[in-house]
Length: 185
Image 1 (tube, rainbow, N blue to C red):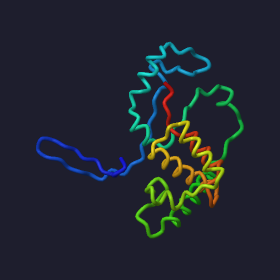
Image 2 (cartoon, rainbow, N blue to C red):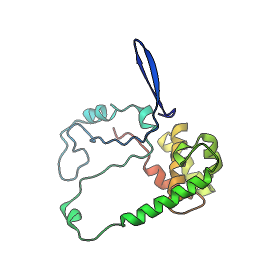
Image 3 (cartoon, helix red, strand yellow):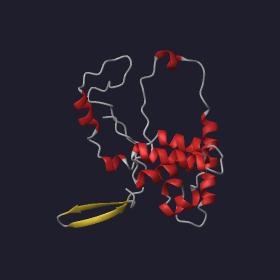
């Protein structure tokens, strides 16, 4: 995944292809699909939930930047007449963030924050003392690997870019940490 290539090996030989991609996935929280659902009882044992969630290896989970649990949506929320933020406003904010990243990486081989190496993370993801303390606490409590540490910082940089902020604050780090993959079982 990080090398941006895929190699297919067969008896006759192997071939390597470029494979720069964005992975998006979904899974149920347990075999029956109702673990944590407030309106339907889960029928799975604790060990079944743990086995199910451990089917995805830790090293693969470590490479997933954002993990969001999506709860069941009630009828009242779906039928509510109030609208969320318009797509055009979101599009504009994303375009502005991408423009900041293009400017940041002008002359480099990368296009976005996700492609930063540890050296670029050191250069472009500096934290103030409050954000450093939060990151230190997250490292200790969540047992983040070096890869996880860098992924949180890259995500915090992107969150700051979306907010139009020059520097990464504790609030940006806190938001990035909440998206960090972690096992439930």
